[in-house]
Length: 204
Image (cartoon, rainbow, N blue to C red):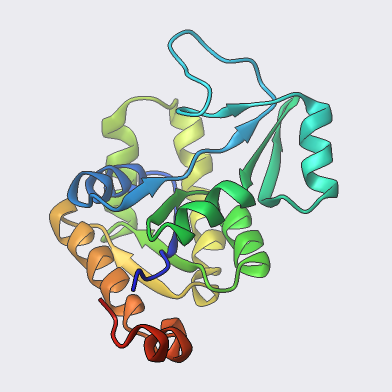
């Protein structure tokens, strides 16, 4: 009997290493898919529809909103981004786990609409280490880094709304912890269908 997949949502402060953890999870699992968002922005050179994003018009996006086909959405500048419910549910029904890296606001939207999702908050080992990582990656000006650091305390206040917290000190350990969480979640009684078990005579 094929078990339904799990929607795994990772978020946390900028510089916590969420993206790197996600890459490690995808590489280590053959049954995990990285969620593909819909967006109203134009595709960039090298981007493929259905691989990087689902590129749609604003009219199509608003129609998806009206039909409750988005698990979460946000407007960034003049464009919209969202997580398509149908695509996620189809992957889960096929037994694949779906991984989504998203900000806190989007994660809580998903938890509200899709309570069976698992929210994991990724944090660095310390605020000092977070600052060092932001400086090392060299993509932000000093004032931007200070602004990001100023937001961290508020972001950390949202931790109680998450299911798990993972400290990303060593990447391999963080990936192992998330993998262990996923395995444990698959064993929860709420994910066990007694009816299917009785009908098929087993779990395999």
